[in-house]
Image (cartoon, rainbow, N blue to C red; front, side, top):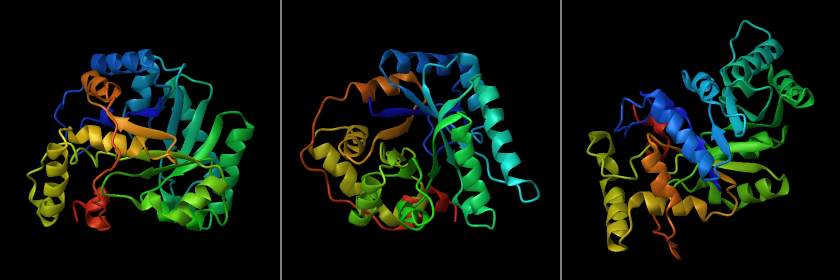
Length: 282
């Protein structure tokens, strides 16, 4: 199964298209149980997802491959101590001795004078057998061209969807294949705005693009979430797709998708004011 179950939605304030603000603990337990029953092997989480790690620990996830992300470094503290302490805190919350992967959550942590020390400590986590793989979560996949000059991450997590196709760059694909980097795609629904028509004024600038998208789905008798998922699934360079769900009914719909698409709509957008949700409130 190519799906990695995302847990960012464990924070009720996450995302722009939330329909269920009361995603309670029992619903989360059902979600994890259903994922387990349907051969979803991995969970994606992070220290900053409020109580996500704690709740996963209470539910019990020792049979999953867990990928977590480190919190942003504090300026007035030792880098090595911060990284090791942060991982051990996550392990304690998750009630695990080790996890599959740990990612740098903020590229800015590698842009300072502590870069070498940071990377050395990440590698040390592997030597200590606390993690199997180390990597980084990126907003722009083009950053891998800079990173690869001084570090070969085991995993990169990047946005990818029907509008955001930066991953399809030939140079980037060559780097990924040559260095055998594991690729985790996120934001395949662009925080939900690809799954249903959004009436927020901030997106009026791209009305023609959204109309073309929803009209194509309607013309081809497919739900937008089906096309968005299949677009990511059909990309062979992507190893895992991080998808967040508010309830297991949504997960059921994804797992039941059996349709195939030969040709997807050509709707690439290079405007980072749209494809990068970080910019939506600017």
